[in-house]
Image (tube, rainbow, N blue to C red; front, side):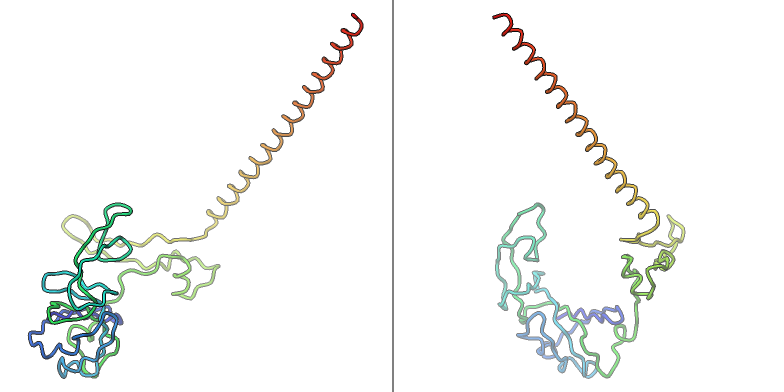
Length: 236
């Protein structure tokens, strides 16, 4: 069985291949999401506690959370159920998935170190890979560097260095800050609000002028009808 172990604290990951089935018996009949003490893996894993996050069987079918079976089943899946990526809205498909219970025919398991043991695991707990990307939302950047709302955060964006290759020179990339409020955005908002208020004022003035014109025409029409009726009375 292959064990893909991740250590989120250091951002590291390592794959371990274990041929002896007796060593991985601590994972048997355990479910996805359960925490397991790695007592049977060996002395180098003494004190470690792993959390099962997923796995695949020998044919490559993935384990699915919520399916309480140690075997393979066929389910009607959609985009919200997982283990299926629909190509159009509302598409459903019947697919084969593994249950969330670990059995002997599981070929690989995905694990996360929840509790570190006494000894270091070479290539996993003794190395560190810092996050290459920082926050991009303005509030998260202020929270990370403990900045006030008056300080400019554009100089605190974490840049990512890209090494030189045969086709490009060495350069750095930085994300576009989201929800950043600057003097330009404030002025743009004021201009849009002023433009909207001007449209409302213009529309109300035009409506008042039109109502006044309609009233004048109605008065003129009423006067004409009175004159016509008076002429008819005189003629009789």
